[in-house]
Length: 163
Image (tube, rainbow, N blue to C red):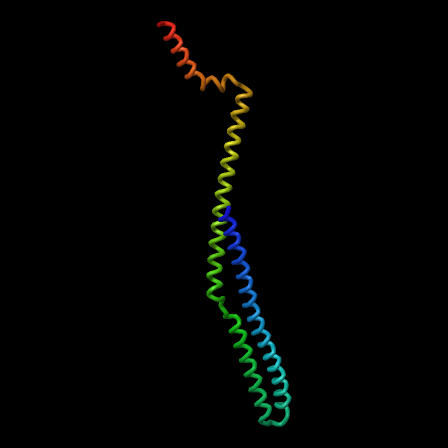
């Protein structure tokens, strides 16, 4: 049972560590997503500002605002791509392997217990069937096992009387 306890403890710890790692990765992705959203909001403001100036007389400030807006969109796109490409940490993979190993051992122990329980059930069924046969036909059940010893005893009795 100590193996089962150890495996359950390993499973619990590895699941907790994996949950923490997933939480950290999700937090990083959300942070980068929020930064990308802020950058897009800023780009939208710059495009509005650039559109306003572009409609007016063709002055250099409008094109500068347009370029800044395009740069903000580019930065937001890069942040989104980086957030999608983030890979789990190497220790997370190791923890996954430990978790899978613990699950495998728990499964093997459960199968072993199941096999023992099925064998016990079969043994109980056999005993029940033998008891039922004995109750129904006691002489039929006893006679095959008593024929040999009875014949030996009778033959010894006959030999001893003949001497």
